[in-house]
Image (cartoon, rainbow, N blue to C red; front, side, top):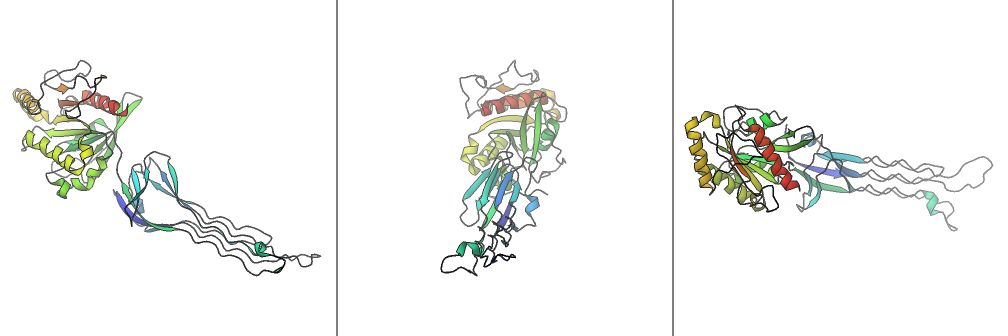
Length: 366
């Protein structure tokens, strides 16, 4: 089960009670107080772990507590400190104060650790209260209480490329073709109900992460469909791949304009990220119509076919790549990095698409 938002109460451990004790040994007269201090309460820590991908393991844990410190003992023995409680979260998790909505921590990197709540101090034993006027103190401090906070964990997936498209446009098919992700694939809308991440391998040593989110429809930023709940998962994605269905009953212009409008309405910053466009399901279009469809779409964007020798796309199909995409001349963010027709079913242009996306990812990383 995929869970991307939970509310929790977390408490650090209480300090242990100080001890009231007196030295009692043979041949030792009036040994005096020797009560030890209480142990410190356990602290609350957060750790980011790449092996965790959801917050579902918190569903039944509404209150997480660290261990309290043990009481002090005689012979000036300090009580054992409470063990710290480490809360493991996936990368991209924000720890938010439920009362103020303030983002307290942003867990982004594998192995990152932060201490959230410190455990209470242990109480002092009666040995600390001996004085010239009170040589038999019968008082020891109670341990300090731990801290308690009400928080919300909010997961925003981290990916290099986020797939954006209408329902049933072929996002799940593409991510299953190019990566290790295995989402459910079916011929009806909203098959994908939860985000999916997949690692796309480029050769033996390079890779990037692709995110598939549920389909977006018009009005998604207002709560229509499933997209609004998961649009925030691509907020951290620096590159978007808009997927436009050549075989859809929706007009191509309507598809790209609606998708870009929904992204801009949700996040203005996200709308200015680098992006590319894949025209999907080219295999179901008669060959004599494909060129006209693609050329018309390029004209709609104010572009014309532009081929690159570096990327071996099907030369029988028109495509566009920004000339300055890999140069120091810069990159026009208002234009797509590339536009290419593909078919996941027949693998047409899939391998070149992987390398084109990797080039896009590298341009963002540098």
